[in-house]
Length: 615
Image (tube, rainbow, N blue to C red; front, side, top):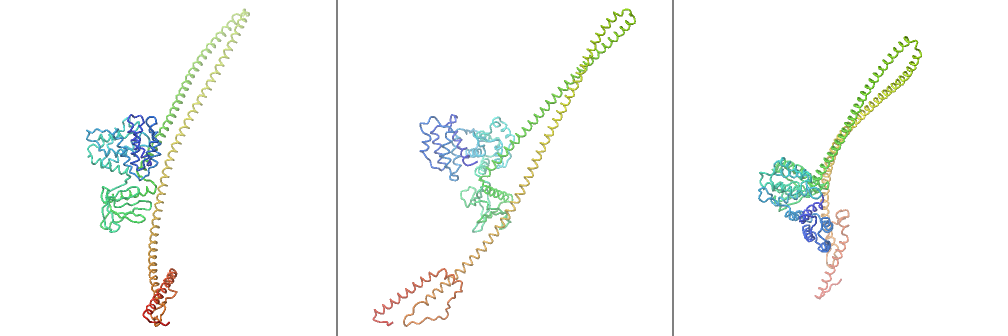
């Protein structure tokens, strides 16, 4: 979340506070005042000409938030320079506008929060809210904020009251708005029985930690850089620096240590009457500090290492990074939940499909059973008809035999009767054919029954294949879990390798520092020799100038006893002669001119006295 997004959240509250009719539009005169105040608190030059041009009087009606955004982006937010203003002033301006309209607590209640604490909770809500409008905070972020406040007060969160608050329909549907959150804090359900001063201190601590990017603060003993004495200072750690003050009011800043990737923290053994010592090393200095106990030392070293890590990673705020990670975790949980729901829906669909096919199979079995019953009934009926026909034939045959034996005389009548019997036989043969056709139908029904059984076997095989696919999906899920574990192990190994590389780089840095110290000592020795040689050269130049002075009449040549002309092998003379040969020539010319001038003056003085020097 960048600076523009943070400013827009606060400005959105100011804009909606000016929308008295809740129509989504604000009058132009109010927007002019709002824009002027924003330019003032953001420390940017106010352009009244552009403001009047953008909000001309001939425009129709009030301006919506979408109509105000182009001016806000072009003439205000694009000119904002990070670090040139205090964001708290912007928040106070927008809080003043929105609190008059929306924040109206019950003044008669004993649990009401002070105005300053309500403002800090409003800022914390804006920091942790989602990046969509209207601004709401998800229950997970509310629970995180309440846990931070309760942790600062050294108490446990009232989970029952919190669950009752989250179970409300408005909270579950659209999230939590800031005014409902402040109303819940003013109700005193979560802070019942706790002094207001303790609540205010806890809210201020959480506000400084989350909004002010304070990773840790507290008293530490610090060793001076010049006097090397120990003094107790109030330290404030942020992702980019470590500041220390004379007291916890943070009015008198004694120093500021810039943290970067070249800094490191080391634990030191107890000495100088101090215990729980550690040091912070930078490229230029080493700061020695002492904590009250081992736990505090561990917390401070861990916090400083976290600040250095954030600077190396290019991150400006720890809690912005943590908020993004929590949001990613929520999105991942939501994706996993949706994937589970989709899997459950797919399994339910497969189960319903299986149940439907089982029902169809039961229907087929029932139809087959009914067909079997009908076939048995038809078979029984056919057998009865066949038995009846058989008995009738037997009766007729007996009657014919009796008639043939008893009535030989009546052959003609019998032949006629035989003709009738032949016709009857034909009818029986036709009936027999029909019986054979019925038998073929029975065979066909049995074949259909076999086909139904094959279809049932195919359904069972398809069900078995789907069960195998389900088992394969479970195996893939287990393989993905094992792969994730292996990746975690590889990441741990990579971190160990990087840590060893960092230790090796620190050792090489120490060696480079030792070599630099030795080179500095050699340079100092060479400079000392150079100064000594320069002194000798100056002495020799003086002696040479004395020897080069011309000798006047009556003067004696000076004795050269005890004076040695340096040779060209002297390194100091050779260095001086190389560097200052031109200066020596100029000095010698000036000395000769001076001596000539002195001789001329002496001669003039003798001439004025009446004496005469003969050359």
